[in-house]
Amino acid sequence: MSDIKTQFETDGYYILEDFLSDEELETCGAEIERLHKLGAEYKSNEDPRGRSFQLEPYAKTAEQGGLPILRKIEQTRDYSDVFRDLSRHPKLIGVIRELLGEDLLLFRSTLMLKPANHGSAHSFHQDSAYWPMRPPSLVTVSIALTESTPENGCIQVIPKSHEWGMQEWGLIAQDTDEAESNCEDVDTSHAMNVSLKAGSALMFHSLVVHGSGPNRSPHPRHTALYAYFPPTVQYVSKNVGDKRTFPVVSGLNGQETATLKAELVS
Image 1 (tube, rainbow, N blue to C red):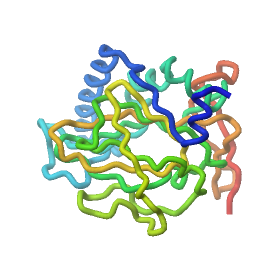
Image 2 (spheres, helix red, strand yellow):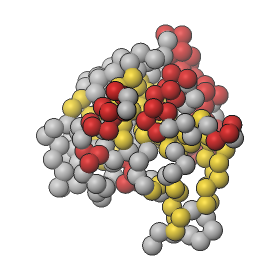
Image 3 (cartoon, rainbow, N blue to C red):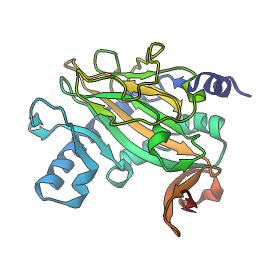
């Protein structure tokens, strides 16, 4: 077993340092600005695609720099070649293969945004508690596109919490002074801040308990978030005949997509 996989399976997370170049980071920064403008256009035209561009719920003002203050952009693959390509970055996928194997599908492609002086806190939670995928063994990747620090709301993780089993959680987005967790039985005393330089990534098991503080700083905290899984993980649903198609990012004989029929759950 590789050192990377050993650390990941022991602690529930792994940090990939400095895998993006300054030029790649500049490209991502320009693309985020373009997507802000695109989101503003969709919302002004009442375009249904505007629902993928979610406003920051606890912003102090409606706009920043003439653009809406966004909390996140979902399904970035649908709107951005830059972030579609980033999900397949060779240095990133090389590590994911070590953790999950050659065949990889992409469950989620999102931009998480914490605007300067506005970004809300995210209460502690487990990703798999919200995802219809079983077994709950995906790998979530959070790529720092700007420097990520405690001051601007970096991710916090509780090491080894992927061994706790799945629990129930409430609303994730929180105002600055609200509770750090909606789950009363969770001990967050061992949570650690994961500061990241721009261009580095935090990879963590989808059962790792994690959250983040608010952004009280004058610096934005922007991250590209992806979640990967192997074909051994199944899409689950309560609806007979339900199915879902996922992008393939590695293996599976070069297929572009894979459609999974849902496993029924009661």
